[in-house]
Every structure is written in structure tokens, then in C-alpha cells.
Image: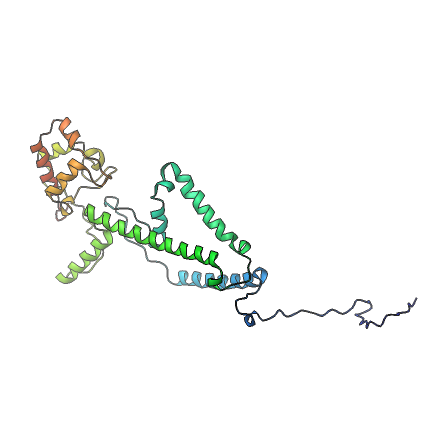
Length: 293
């Protein structure tokens, strides 16, 4: 049954229905024409970021498959080392040294503060919803960003400087540096160049010396083992390459940077005289890496 249409509105029929034809897809405006403005974060901006992230991730995976990371040097359980993470974790390594992030506050340091920091980073797009995108017009966000970058740079630099000072104070030399120096020496002597430290095991110098008994009475065996290979502590085979007699005597009497307690008191309690302890230090200073088994 027909109905009279008294309105003057133009109706365009779609198929057999009387649904008015829509305007179709509306092209969003070009935001580059508005300085300091940006498109909607969700979904426009976020979708573009995800697509770029996928491309970068695929490229990175292809690179790791095409060029596998080289293996490092074989682990040496007898080496005396100062633990050190890779450079991109130095800031976190230094942060966890502070009292409010370790000890009784370890939960706060490992979960509390990082959780707040990363939670704020995740919520930033939802909290900072202003249309302004020029950094100098966004003082709060820009200040937090600059403060974070400054903190990362400071903590990284401080951790590396402290590590270098520890190496210098303890007289240690990283194993990869030792390997490079050994390879350089072989090259200068015309020998085959290799980055490996000698596979032969360093021998004990003067096994029959009475100092061996002094070594046991001074309770050194509890950390360094009866064979000087280390029993929870570092190996003392070749220790003479790192410390001279005076240096070893100082370590016996004062310890080593909080990582080794002094053993002078225990040695005296077990009947050793100062002459015996001096002889022990002299014997340990003779332990050189040149002697091999």
C-alpha cells in the first residue's frame, strides 16, 4: 500500500529497502596541516607503531639467524673475578647496590620502585591526553623524560667507574684482557696466535716446603682447598703473578676489600709465629703460572 510522501527530502533507495544512502568513509584530515597536533593515539597512532615494531622485530630475528652470536671463552671455575653485567644492565646493577633497594628493602627495590616506574610508563598515553606534542609545551612529560635519561647515564657511568676501581684495588685483570695480552705476546714471538689461556694446569711450586703445613694451619684450606685450586674461594695457583709477598701478607692480616676476611688471627691461634706467616706469604708469592703440571 503506497504512502504519500509529503516531505521534500530527497530519498535515495538502496535495493528494495528505503534506507538512505550514507556518506561513505570519511577521510580523516591531514594532521600535518596543524602544527603541534597529532592524530588519535587509539587506533591510528598505535596501529602504526605496532606495524613498525613488527617490521623491526622480524628484521632483528632474521639478523640473529643469519649471524649467530659467537660463543664466549670457556668458563674457568678457578678464576678470581668481580661479577659484572653487560653494559645495558649497569644502571640496574648500580641501583640494586643502594641500601633502599637491597637488604631488608629488597622487595621494594626489585618490585616496588621498578613497578611504579614501568606502570607509569605504560599508563602515560592514558594520563597525558593533551593534543600538544611539542616537547617544550609539555613541561611535566619532558622533565620526567630528561630526568630518566640523566639517571640512566649517571648510574651506568658510576657502576663502570666503581668496577674499574675495584679491579685496580684488587690487582685483578679480566680474563679476556689476559687472553688478548697472551695472543699479542705470541704474535710478537712468532708463535701461533690464540686467545686461549694455556690448557695445562698451573702446578704448585715447592710442594714439600714447610709453608704447606703453615697454609693448612692458617685455615686457608677452608676457602682455597688443600690443592690450592679453590674450595668456594679463588684458586691460589699462580697467585704470585697478581700479588707480591708484601701484598699477600697484607691480605692475610687485613683481608681483601670485604670479600675475604683476615686470617692472621686464626693463624696465631693455631700456633703460627710471625716468622711462619711471613714464610707462608713468601711461599705463596712463588706460585707462578709459568710452572705447569
